[in-house]
Amino acid sequence: ILKNWLKGVKICIEEGGGHAFKMARDISPFLADFLEGNNFQMIWKRICVNHKTSEKRNWHFHEWFDAFKTMKLIHYLTETAYPTVSMQRAISALTEWISHTNKGQYPNFSEVKISDISEQIEFLKKLRNLDQTA
Image (cartoon, rainbow, N blue to C red; front, side, top):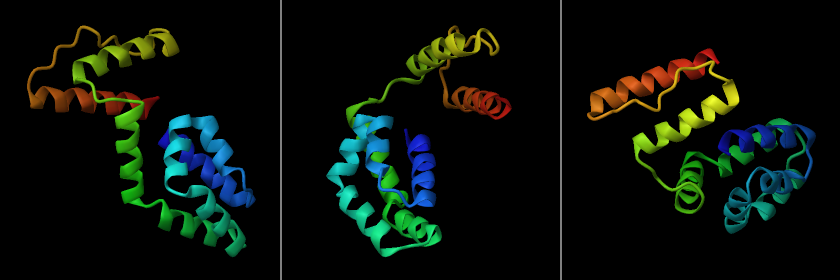
């Protein structure tokens, strides 16, 4: 959600268009609810009206949607749409998703049993390497 949101906002900023909130709702109704609760429509309108160049709009958007606001969005999504799950459960869901979308291109992690923190770190490194080669 965050990746799509930031990519979409970049396009909106370059176009100077006011369709960012509609795009947010298309990405996720939870994202739109978060933005609505944070007065995004008013902020976005002010950014678009007051700043004619995409550079200035981009700067002011990121001044508003900073690291703290990003963290608040992630917490909001965790509280509403994507509750915290155990690593083992997440691995099972990831394996299922990978097998459906990549037709066996990646290893099956469903049998992986991870007990201590060092094994968790090593497993996450393997996943990161898979992501970087995709």
